[in-house]
Amino acid sequence: MYIVGNWKMNTTPSESVALASEICSLGKTSKCQIWIAPPWTSISEVLRVCANTNVLVGTQNVHWKSSGAYTGEVSAPMLKAVGIDFVIVGHSERRQYFGETSETAVQRAVSALKAELQTILCIGETSEQRDIGATNQVLESQLDPLVEHIKREDLNLDKLLIAYEPVWAIGTGNAAETKDIEEVHNFLKNWFNEQGLKQPPILYGGSVKPENFAEISSIDSVNGALIGGASLKATSFIE
Ligand code: PGA
Image (cartoon, rainbow, N blue to C red; front, side):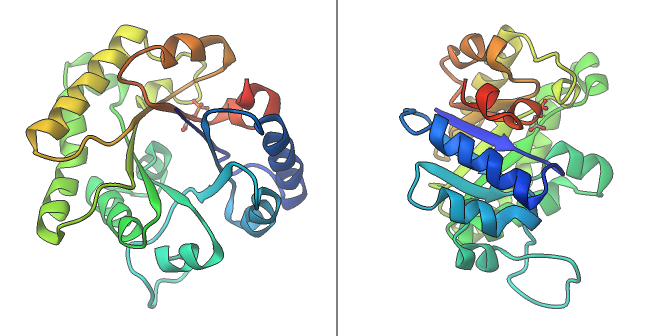
């Protein structure tokens, strides 16, 4: 089971050190994979805190090129070189506020996979898309570029994970219903089978918290959770 904390644009370096230290200590005996993604400015401190622990450190974005004139961007080989273990790409907030498309999200994923970083590709429908019954179609359209790249470049999927995050469930306090999560995760697993691709672990994200985690994690097709708000307190995250 993967438990991934996405800290988003929160915590100064000193707050990050305190949070990461508490997570490392509370999570010491956990059987889960515990992963945290602090903001860029805290990466080096958090890497230092998590060295020689069972907590892996990742970033919330990565560029698709390995170097070049891309002001403000950071590449996968750069992240690998400082000891980053994983990246999150295509988060709905990137899609909503920063012009991320399914194509650019997948290009980021491809460059991270090539650098041998574990890569969480986020996908999910909006409430309007769900209301008109377009959920599966939207998810397919977000994954289609991935298949094209995988086939063209013979990409190894061993380090790929998918996070299903319905946009309407993120940060709202209202997670999706168990039966809806189950339905979508099964759809995604089948979809990878139909493409002849190895099934990646599929995480659920969107208002996961201690009160609903037991139920969500009991769904067979749920391999973990991507957690925003509840990951900013070590006790609720580890619980
Ligand atoms: P949330 O965020 O847990 O605060 O809903 C999840 C996410 O954005 O990954």
